[in-house]
Length: 150
Image (tube, rainbow, N blue to C red; front, side):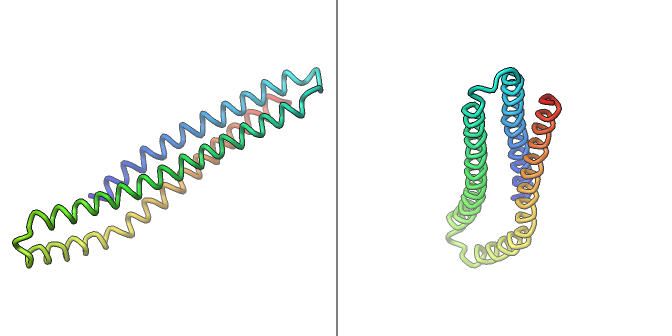
């Protein structure tokens, strides 16, 4: 069940990540193309504009990194909270039947340990998809700039 929950969360995170990076990279690409087309005639002030664009790109990458770190932190925190609540709930609900609880806990831990590789695989797939989407959106933005600047 935890794996299914993680798969749906992974899908949502990767989709939002793709949309966010596409928006950021396309905005930067369109801005660079407009600036370069505007600067074709005059060379004055281009260094300052390029420095501002570089600062904007650096700020976007910092923003993307912060969002990534916070979303991964949130996912991991939620997974551990769910696990803690399920263990606490099962302990509180069957406090009088300790032997039955121990057996259920043992089987649930065995089941959880069976799911750990799937969870790590799903998290690694999510990270690889996020990097792939970032790279594809970056290539698309750079391709747009190279096509429209020349």
